[in-house]
Length: 207
Image (cartoon, rainbow, N blue to C red; front, top):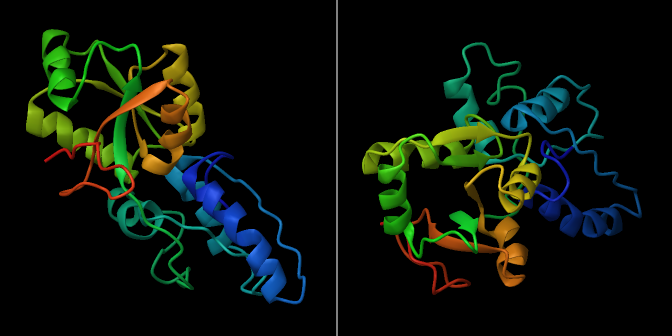
């Protein structure tokens, strides 16, 4: 179960490991089922409430296991009791990106633009309570700016709306941004890390 729509980084990881899972279990077929929504809560709740028969795996994110339990008043499942970690699959930085034609070169330019037009800019994330959302809100607090948060059922729809001009900014995993950056459609202004990422050495950090 991938708790995000097709095209999200979590979905890509699932599709990369799918053949290996099948091969390692005597060709037992694995079907990827995307159940997006509520920052991953819908798909996670589906797995948490399923019979513990070993036939359902959740490709979880830290939003599901460490953040949502603290932000949700009445969570639909107990992440610590209802889910059992099996393996860490991947990790990577989160970036702040805009369309290539947006007249900003870096995060400082974006902050300056937001200060000149409070409430006029908007940023998309894979959902409320996601790490992407918390990063966006922390930047707003630290920079003293107001930009509107637009939560989506996954990063794919947010990237579509960014390219179409419906929103101005996305906060997304760098892996999901890379194809659009390579195609010249988006530019990453910064990553939410304390030091630069080896695979994208020219992208500065929020620090």
